[in-house]
Amino acid sequence: MPGSSPSIACFYRLMEQTRPPMRADRSAAGTLPTRAYRYCEAVTAAAGYGWWVFPPTGLRFIWDGADIFWTCDALDDWEPLSPSAQLPGFSAAFDAAAPAILKGCAPPMLTALPEPGTLQIWTGLMVRTMPGWHLLVRAPANLPLTGGFVLYEGIVEADTWFGPLFTNLRFTRTHSPITLRPDFPLLQLQPVQAATYGDDVLDATELVPGMDGLTDADWHGYHQTIVIPNEDPDRPFGAYAKQARRRRKATGGQTCPVRGPAGGQKTL
Image (cartoon, rainbow, N blue to C red; front, side, top):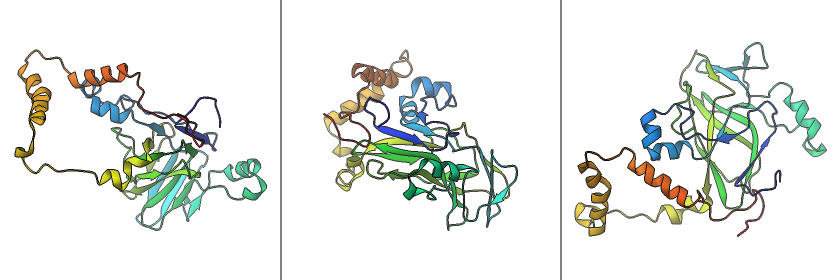
């Protein structure tokens, strides 16, 4: 494994021009309103949860309702996508580095899917996670996309599956160029423990059907959280955010109980 310190995720960059992944920014790259950034811990925590992943290169697309045309920073003209395409020069670079059994097996950068207006994009990365940890692959949280497409979400079991890190998108407009900038996040990867989305966890829910089911402790919690602060005209802004930050500071930011090398054995 590259590096000497334990890691939740280890990224492998196969396309050298691809921008490396980076920690997602709690300010959503400065796009959050100032009030939200300062006082809404729920919004900033979601924005900063995970890593940003970028397009493999600058890409542009046009979908005419039937066919997809594309170009990139390494091309001078538009080309039809039928059905897949490589970044110019990548296949040769892959074959030069890969063992003999894998020569000719470079993953495509773009693949047109059977459903109209849908496209698979490889990020130029592969990734491994530590045992028991998977990756939720989604659009960047609280960071508006550039427009003209929507992303599908997925969960990758990257602790056992090692292959191209890709995403699928669906175009939402035709006959108009759609641009993916190489310096603007395309995806947000969020680590999730495998057990958290199993049926035994997700089925373990309860419903209190009416207010008569609330206990004294529930009413007390509502009183402390909502009523008391709103009865104080001099209350400070962002009390929840301050409390959450104090709790995080008190625990040293340690939220992962088990650390171990990605792709290796857990250590206690």
